Image (cartoon, rainbow, N blue to C red; front, top):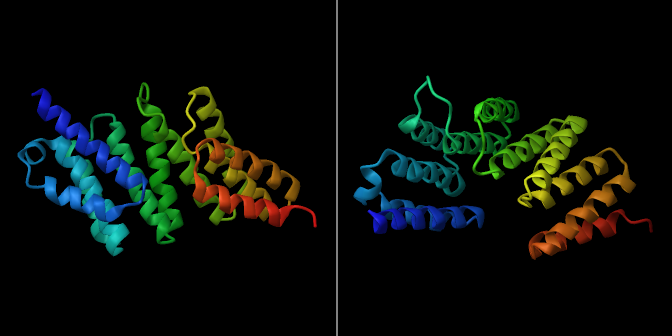
Length: 226
């Protein structure tokens, strides 16, 4: 059983890496390959992993919104029954649905999904993956900014930052500071915007995330007094 477990965990790891690097063709290739594998087809949790990522690439590669949402819903239903607390993975799949609605500008629907996910997270006795809550709050904040609910967006960002610090976890810490800076920029408060953008830049420099460093450096230069 150990080699089998190791194999499934390695597939899980590769899917996660490809997803976070936005390599959606790699996600598709992995999913379609493992769909023939009895280790996944004969185990609901393992199959759920594949269906989740199928839903992701259906949207990211082909923009099939309805098909993607249906796939994600079927993935959740593989393991979820109405009388039990949601698992972390089920909540993550729900979060993916919210991100898709946000990407196609169905912002109110995205907020509904995120609100549901927030309720499910609060019912969990503990989180083994702290990034789920951080991702949820960050995505809520982004939608609120687009709905012009700037103060509410900033509140969610600050709550997520405190959560990251309390859990010694830097995931999305740079993005959260950037979002606050962007919110202040939208309100015309350049001093506060610069303060948070500079903090975001420091985080990205520590993480050696070049794509964000260049972008934020330009934003900072644009906001500095001429």
